[in-house]
Amino acid sequence: MKVFNTDMHIVTFIFVIFEAIMLLYQFLFYLQRPFEKKRLYYIILLILFIIYNVCGGLFPDPTLKRISLTVQNVLAWGSGFALACFMPYYFYKAYDLERLKFHARYGVLLFLLAPFLIFFGIEYLIQGNIDRAVKHGVIIPFIYAVICVIAMYRSIKIKQGEDTKLGKEMLLSLVAIAPWVSMPILSFFRIGQLPEVLVMNGGFLVITALFIWKAIEQAREEALHLQALLSTVEDSEVKQDVFMENCEAYRLSPREIEVAALIADGLKYKEIADRLFIQERTVTTHVQKMFLKTGAKNKVELLNILKGKDQLFR
Image 1 (cartoon, rainbow, N blue to C red):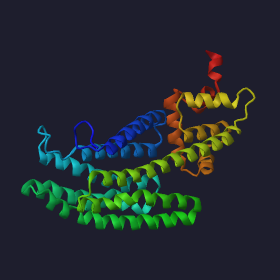
Image 2: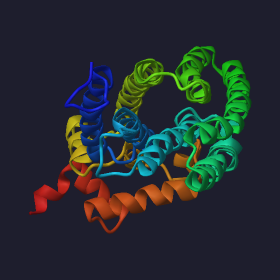
Image 3: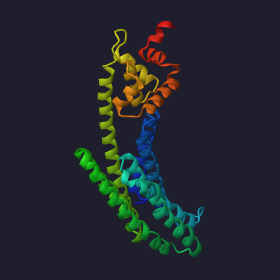
Image 4: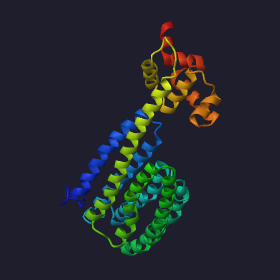
């Protein structure tokens, strides 16, 4: 079943609507917590999936005269390659898979982007044969995808050795990335729009479930950790909820709140760095950011602002 007299299947359209709604919500969450880089990577992935579904659903359409068939094919296949190029980087950043560093930064350029430019950007534009360009252009990406998944599996095994619970989560990510490996196969055999959309977006649903699950766990851990730190803010004139409300009012990140709580407890930068397992210069950077956000000029003024004591002198 097609929608709006186009080649887009209704299932594709449903996924586009769902992902657009998810994009709106995630973007609003990101505006509230701009320090969450993993959410930013997920938003980029969302955008690429939407573009992939829209371009793959609408193009190529011979009845669409306003856009040449050549441009339509480049958009349709280009959106798929763009999504494929970002997937390794997403898993590298979202799950801290260090063994994917080369693949995320250089491998996709050499073995995904380069074949696309050669076979679709040159061969197809010169010869005009999309079938031949597809068959030539997906061979290298398929071999590379298998190698990349092996690297991901090995990285997962390392993580599993450190944390069994994390390893189980990572194994689910293999299920999520399986459709990515199948992309060259689906393209080579020119599978119809509906099966391709179900396979690719099915993997995306698994990625989304993992992202939400991880976000909930992180929020719980941050809440418990902050509560423990705030309990160290010993000041008879200050309530913990006032301190926390002011931190949130000035949009301090969870890490900045941790640093502020430890400063309030009288710890020095070196002691804070040791407590949080970070470098001392990182602590300094967090404090400088808090100065900018609150308008404080020194640590004493910063603590007075967060504790609400500055109100007494206004």
